[in-house]
Amino acid sequence: MEASDIKAILKSLGLKPSRRKGQSFLLNESVLRREVAYAHVGSKDTVLEVGGGIGLLTKILAQHAR
Image 1 (cartoon, rainbow, N blue to C red):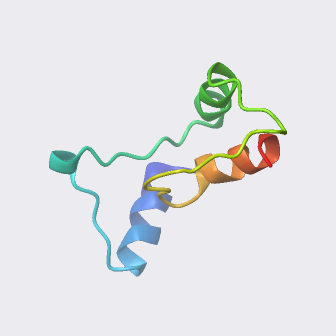
Image 2: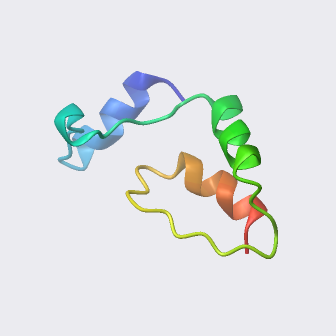
């Protein structure tokens, strides 16, 4: 997914990320997968994702956690 895709999705929902609030969106799937691996998320773990964004990290977490 490209940054322009994210911007289009957010715009269609009437949303705009705020850097002042620390909102950013990871787009690189390799980085997302690495972060989940670093967290040692496993099939027995329950994960609460705060500020889920548009679901890219959520998708990967759902593959690893229960």
